[in-house]
Length: 441
Image (cartoon, rainbow, N blue to C red; front, side, top):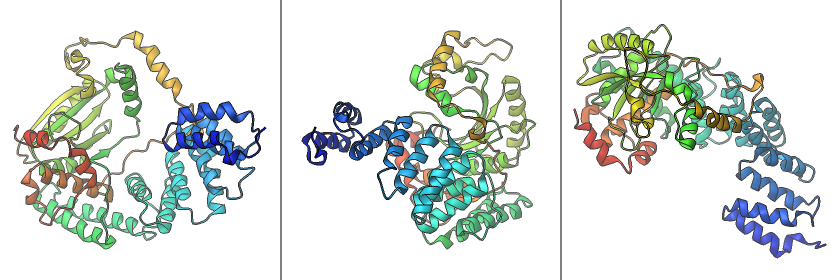
């Protein structure tokens, strides 16, 4: 048996594969030599690293736990075990590992961030906020913790708004909204004032925030599970069964000022089913229209009712140009299944779900980890009212408008618009197309 594994050529070949991200090659090679080096710390570390990068979470946990018997500094291993358990849907089980990492290394900001994410997943919002703050106090440049904290504030407000400057700004922005709600926040003059006051608050940070969101949601407490449905579609090119009952009311707008007005209207809109709604700037490749609002409906009848309510609302909003339609499912489905786009308002739809697709959907679902009830994601309804997240997304919209030469933004925003790295990267390959769309009205 070769004793000195550290200096062996076979080990170096495996390490080279890992560095080149050839993880499957590395795994085959390490398996072929592992029997020669039983209970070897180096191999345990390599196995753990490879399985982690291959998203083979159970095996990653297995080898990281073996490593705990060898390593003196365990905090990094604890975090990796916690992340792997989270990926396995074992959210509550992940929490003690992040806490162990913090106990060993109290200034390990990454552990606080991951602990916050675990708490957020199971609806412990106060604990999530607390840990995102602790992470930022250790590393104020940690963009993940910053964005996680800002997103969480759209779902829950902390007991103490003085705990961190982002909490203070969010609190005072919500006060601005309350002030203008009484006056009419759909008026362009008031929108201009809201943005100016928000600017003054955000300037207290003395740094730019690159918030990587482009859509403002007002969710209800029902999880539409769109990520899962697109996973089914992208893997098998089939439309999930759920999507056949999904209808949405879509509002198309001609400029960014009207999009901001629609955001305020959606925030104040009271509907029987509290339908999930969102306002977006379009960034999908070759999808027509730049500014849109969506309201998600449980069936066609609900969509027709919501459309009528929204139509009446739009009439009083002084919009330049707009259209409102009912759409079936998502636009991405239409290329593969053109008949799915057609809607029969009188009865049975022309294109129906293929029952043979059920088995393929099951394959996707079987791939997902099964969670116990205590680990299931808490889907909380969004809070109403303007918040820091909304303002930062509106700033992204303003940059989008400037980049696409929609100069309507000048009516409500006089300052120089700061570059949004998020929007810049999304538009880099479709700027000409987006400018053309602006002139379609």
